[in-house]
Amino acid sequence: MTGPPRVDPRDVIVVGGGPAGAAVAIFLRQHGREVLLLDEARFPRDKVCGEAVSPEAWRLLAALGVDGAVRMLAPHPLHGMAVTAPDGTCFRGDYRGAPRPGFAVRRERLDRVLLDRAREAGVDVREGTKVSGLLMREGTVVGVTAANGRGAEALPARLVIGADGRRSVVARRLGLLREHPRLRKFAVRGYWEGMEALEERGEMHGGGGGYCGVAPLSATRANVTFVLDRRDMAPAGDGLERFYRRTLRRWPRIAERLARSTLLSPPRAIGPLALEASRVSAPGALLVGDAAGFYDPFTGEGVTLALRSAEIAAAVADRCLRAQSSEGLREYDRARHAATRHKFRFNRLLQVVVGHPRLANAAARRFVQRPDLADRLVSIAGDFVPARTALGPSFLLELLGLC
Ligand SMILES: Cc1cc2nc3c(=O)[nH]c(=O)nc-3n(C[C@H](O)[C@H](O)[C@H](O)COP(=O)(O)OP(=O)(O)OC[C@H]3O[C@@H](n4cnc5c(N)ncnc54)[C@H](O)[C@@H]3O)c2cc1C
Image (tube, rainbow, N blue to C red; front, side, top):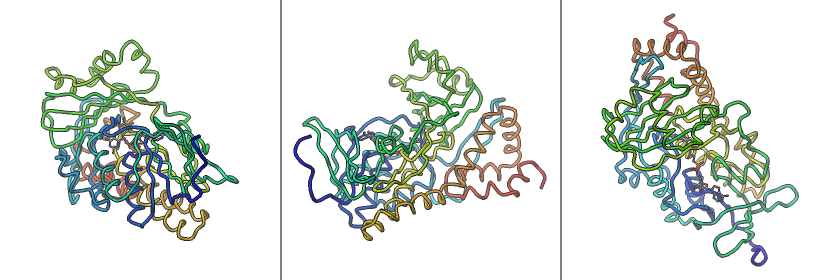
């Protein structure tokens, strides 16, 4: 430690400067709060992600004052999704009624824009600063310990927000986050130039023992990421690039369009993907984004959810700081649950279908016959149509062809 801790704790320390951390910091500045944000990385930094962002994100980006800057990145528009079932049946769904299409953009560019906006908004952003632990007093989080190239220090705060992603130090030190006991999926991502037949829509291809997503970043460039069970990842030990190229052949509709393309950089793997948080608040602390748990990337809502959980967390945090009490932080558990529970149930249902090829083939055939239902499904995945509309009996009866 270099010297004693400051005696005047700042309002909030945010750990992590990805979409969740940058967004919660900006929202807190909008409430007039003093915020210090620490990230171990230096931006722009890479993040393994499918990079397809749902239409609902635009509302949140506008609330953060960053939608203009994101448009300047010229993200590739996504008007919907094309889904290919294991037997090759393909259906398309449109983001019908969305004020703006979704988009695909490199995360290193998107995240940098968000972090720059946080700095402009008056957040004290310190990159290259790794948080290693929490300062605790009588069971309450009262700050963090952090280190940069010049040494370590204790940084007190009235509230700590863990936005430090899947390996969250904040969540783990509080014993709130663990790997999912059964879901053990891994993902491998690569960037390709020259991919054929890319459209202005995201793609999901089932089968092959998992699934593979394609996010077009331009008319010819794509992020191609597959997700497999851990046991299928064993051969990756012999060389990730060889494994990645070889595994892509499991999805012939993708492999044939990549035959004349160039893999732009070595692929990267990540996993296990699924993480469960028992709670998302603790005395003196909140968790946002992936630090609050992660299920599966199939529906591609992670970035939007990170921004949305940041919006909810900032409002609760500001109320508690105003009341000078951390009692009300539990309100965040309730509010986040209310905002996400239908979508999470929808995701779990979808996983059941994706995990059973015959069911997935039958569902895909039905969506081909009923493009209106395909639009609804894709719009729910795009987060601007409430998921509860798919969980009600009428949608299921329509899907089964019973009405
Ligand atoms: C394979 C895959 C595909 C996905 N595809 C999509 C998709 O298509 N669309 C979508 O919307 N979402 C997708 N997601 C989800 C999305 O990537 C995440 O939900 C999103 O990145 C969450 O943002 P975050 O800010 O919580 O975390 P992150 O973006 O991971 O940011 C966490 C930050 O914390 C920092 N940090 C970590 N530890 C420390 C520490 N100890 N001290 C200081 N800083 C620290 C890191 O450097 C990092 O910058 C995908 C995820 C995976 C795994």
